[in-house]
Image (cartoon, rainbow, N blue to C red):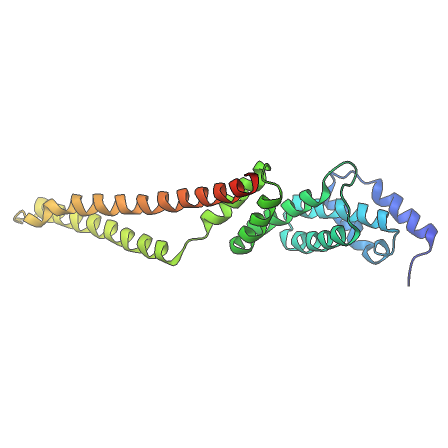
Length: 217
């Protein structure tokens, strides 16, 4: 049953009387009157839902934030909204959705989403940073394998060297020629590990810069 116009006005006034920074209050009231808010006039509904979306993001309710942002983006496209209250609302909601995906550790979807964002808004530094972070968090299988092998080599060299040292100090244990290889194995493993990490990091940065550079050129 739809609310009467007077009821809608009362709910809208009550909603707008809340400090937008009172995120919990905004969420609580929106959830309480969700059905009534959906039958508001479009401008009132959109205004309240924008405030609600921001409150969800600020309180780290990122699953709901993604869902509400997706709905808002569809509305913005359908209604061809260029700006709202002087703000490029499409850019703001698009970025918010990408950030929520990142916080949810959905790095693959976040990378895809933020790549599209970077193509549309190449000068947005926050979007660029989030895109880099999302790509860096995506570890390819080969990189994971190298991580595993190098860590095992490092731990093996340390443990073997430690055992060899203990035996040589506590017992009449002859020095072995193998001992000279422990530092070499350790050094090579550490070097490969950090090369692997730095290579992936720089590759992601180059890819982001390349994507943005194509748009700007």
